Image (cartoon, rainbow, N blue to C red; front, top):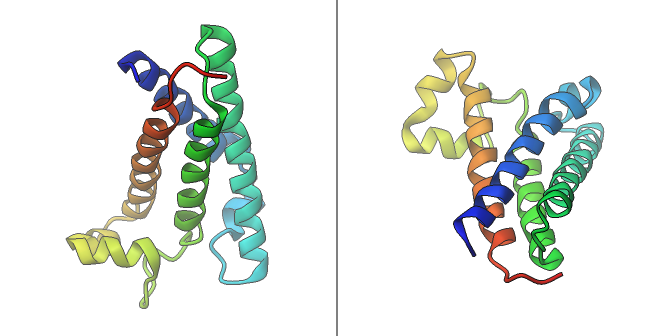
Length: 150
């Protein structure tokens, strides 16, 4: 893996994340994805499908424009990491201040962030985005780690 290869893949996945999370995701998905219902699970899955498709399109664009050849097995694994961790986080949506937190909210509280989550109305969104971008970093490492193959 070269630094340029990793940087290109990380930049593509991160840019696609911003587009997919803020432009591609429709309001119904954003509002419902955190509901503890079947409808919430479906809304979240629909969002993650379009999110992952947006990231895949960004990787394809990088490959096409730069001539960098990606291992699509490694890229698919990286996309799966990004998608899976995105779904986990987004199922928390709207529950950052619950009395009985779950998942990553519990993790945030256990690592000393409970007060911030309750005090700052932006803390949940910032923790969510930090979670996504941290996992995008891991996904980019995985996707960039293969040699120059097709």
